Amino acid sequence: MTIAEFDEVFTTVMPRLRRRLLALTGNPHDADDLLQETYLRLSRRARSRTLARQRQPYAYACAAALNLLRDLWRHPSHQERCTDQLPEQSWDGGFAGREAEAVATALLRGLSPKEAAAVILVDIEDLTHDMAGERLGAHRGTVQRNRMRGLAKIRATLDAAPPRAYERPAAPVPFPQGHTRPTRAA
Image 1 (cartoon, rainbow, N blue to C red):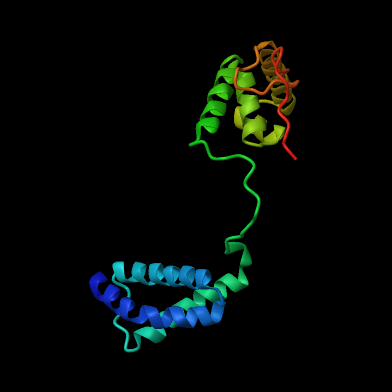
Image 2 (cartoon, helix red, strand yellow; image 1 turned 90 degrees about the vertical axis):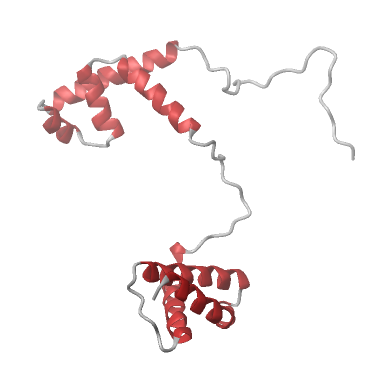
């Protein structure tokens, strides 16, 4: 079955299938989501040419949709969860992650190669001291000592660095002379 044939068949079956899904889910939004997932699943098969022509296309599409619905009921963690709370931080396009990588890389460059390797393996890759020692060909105690020296150097560098301009000040900023804090009208 070609993509064009599949689209034509699915378009004719879609209104009836949506009504069935609406009756099963009781929610038009969930029915539409399920209809879209059914289309995507079956169109993938049509694109890969593994979807054969069906004698009863509605029954086939309905069976695929019911399988998807059953999967959602069995695994509720796959469903979207609605909430009235916004996430704590908004997505900034990955800038904060890139900046953190740049700061971490700069801090690691200030360490000796052995100290940097110990910090990376233990603190970033979450290896134990023993596993890091095996990778580095060093004793567990040596890895531990190099890591502690490296972390001490990183802490000293961070303590000596001036605060960044975009960080919030620790204390509230007072209003300029002659200005008062705005009040809300009751």
